[in-house]
Image (cartoon, rainbow, N blue to C red; front, side, top):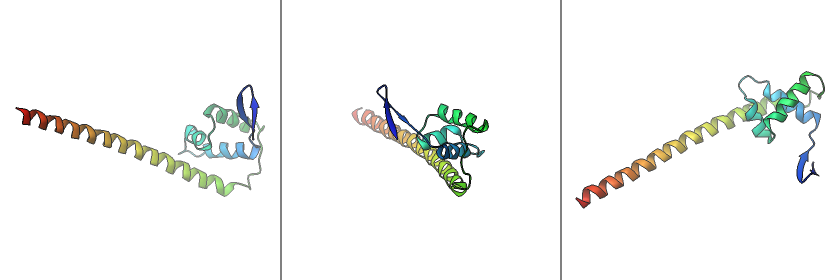
Length: 113
């Protein structure tokens, strides 16, 4: 539900969505920035929702997503692990490229001498 406002788009989120997002952040092994990234929202917005949730301004039916929260939490942890693995593989790939380049340059120098 995006509405045009000053040339930008603003999304309206339901209280259930906000409460779901807040409950995801309550897992000790999940970082707020990971939840925000997975839900495509800004971390500051999520922090504001957490405050509103504590104050009782956001109330949602907990029965609706009791199983979903656990599933989403495991998915977010898996995404974080996969991102770390990709980063490590990219570093390894760059190192291998540099090693190959170094060896090629070394061979060129030794063959031209």
